[in-house]
Length: 199
Image (cartoon, rainbow, N blue to C red; front, side, top):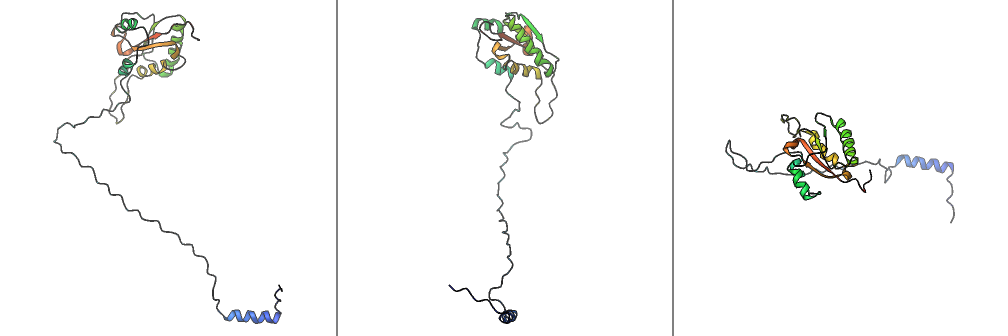
């Protein structure tokens, strides 16, 4: 295939004059960027729920009680009994005297936690079976806010600590104490035997 011949200077000048006087058939236009318009979404029509008829002063049909968790007393009393049934009945009736006791009442959480750990480990090493942990019931506070506030922080925290390492494997039973030993402000902690258990 032959290569096209290059234009002479006079031919190039003539061509340039022709192109100046004519309009191109397909002029190059600058590209126009068209942005798509966002589609307008139709608003969702929500019909308001009808308000049930009521009379002023009438109580509502349903009452929802806001609480942080189930009552601790119910949780502990519903837990299955791990210790000997006869000993459990005696302990529940306050007929077994605790061999050691610790009073955490008035301490902060940061103070009470290490004290409780040291007490339980010491009692277990001394082969005690029933010990008493006194937490107090906590001060009743006015709850005027929208979020309920639990009073008796230690009373609710101690069972959780007892169920965690390093104490859990030393403990057989945790129950609310009998009234004669402090009732809702104290716990019976029944310890496992030390034999065959690593400390």
